[in-house]
Length: 471
Image (cartoon, rainbow, N blue to C red; front, top):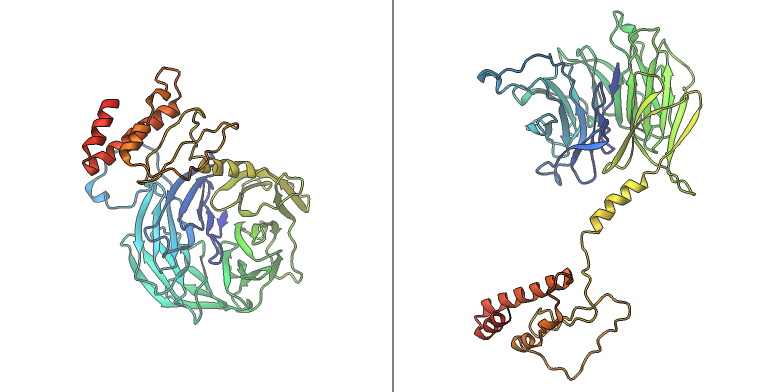
């Protein structure tokens, strides 16, 4: 079973959708939520929160997928109109303003807004296996349980003295992990602390259950990662309470930014782990969780990306999702504004793998289309056309021919009135045949349009008569 850890509160949110990994949700620097289709590599949807500048998106989490029974379509009853559709894939977004936005990718619109629960910014959101329940942790040190059927707060309790920076719900939906610097395991039925784990000196940004809950509780493991920490710690939950220290550590090159893992359902099945670090590298691990391990474990394979230039420049990895095949990995790399998604086969027999990609081409093309919106008209160098602007100003149109010379200023030239400028217009220089320049015809038309507006605004009969005679 694959599980996506979601986004860290200290990083720009970036999360793959569960199971099929068909979509990638990102919140970029501009405050917009973008959902990309990983199959077609195109932008699927874009959502701009109404207060996106003040209510910055801090974390995102996909809701659990729902199975849809195939069959003939039928009309909805009135009692079903207000219910959530089975096909809806919901996405929860925590904001710095303390609200939680629920976005529907099926409807392409905001499903509901959960507010009134937090007085500080939301750092983490986590779905329950029952998709009508959602948990959020905030700077106000509280955890809120939301009921999405009513859109209201179901319960609220103080989690710690410090801000709540990470949450995780167990696979069976009975336990909740929360963390600031101290990790606490809560019984969701009683909302009481079941166990505490200490060992991180900085705020915990990642919590994930690594195994499903077995018949004997000694086989329950979870992992944690903290800010500015180059180790991922694995903790074992024991019945005897002798679980004060982590049992396994995974070494990283930087603090974890995105985590994906394939859970272990038994002792005979190893845990597969993919960790994208803040430095843009991907580390792959595989380990059998069966008690403590004294030495920190190194990755079986490290993946880096670079461009194809003579002097290679690193391309940062944003997220990674493990496939059903042990060699298949779905990568997202580049920038949050324009990520590139690709499924690759990685030979884990090699300790270090460097993938080269030419991503600069697509980025430069999109920038080019933006810059090239303004076009300079091509004007015949021999034509003479005075474009009226502010009163008393002359704006002759210059040709683009290389041999044309700049007009010299005539010091003795006196200011011309509008009527005198009308007399300067020479219609004979404007070709009217089929082979005429479109640019000149457009400029001549624009010239008369401006003069006509000036004549109407000033009620000048002379200007209107001159234009009438020459049209």
